[in-house]
Image 1 (cartoon, protein in one colour):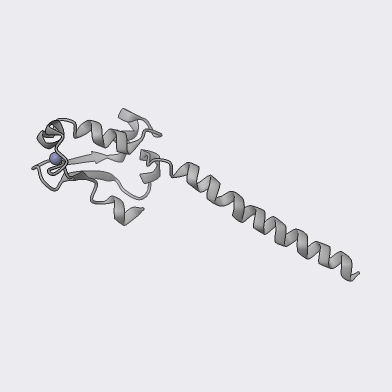
Image 2: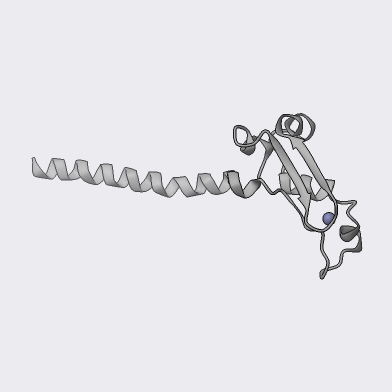
Length: 108
Ligand SMILES: [Zn+2]
């Protein structure tokens, strides 16, 4: 009787351990890169601002999903839309383009 319930406890514990082991792997794969889908329900508009240029853009998430796709890599997209920044073209390490998405730290 005791042995049976112990086995039951061990089974429950090992299942919980397995679930914990699986979760991070799953999460890592999801977090490989940020996609427009990740922002649905968190942001309506993704703002892009450069701390050095006068650049400031507003990109509705719904439009992003239409134009670059729901699973596009937002980091790639950001570097594409900022490719014309004078500082990017110069490719200077001491004076890099400061383009970023100021809303992301609030929602991630
Ligand atoms: Zn810039």
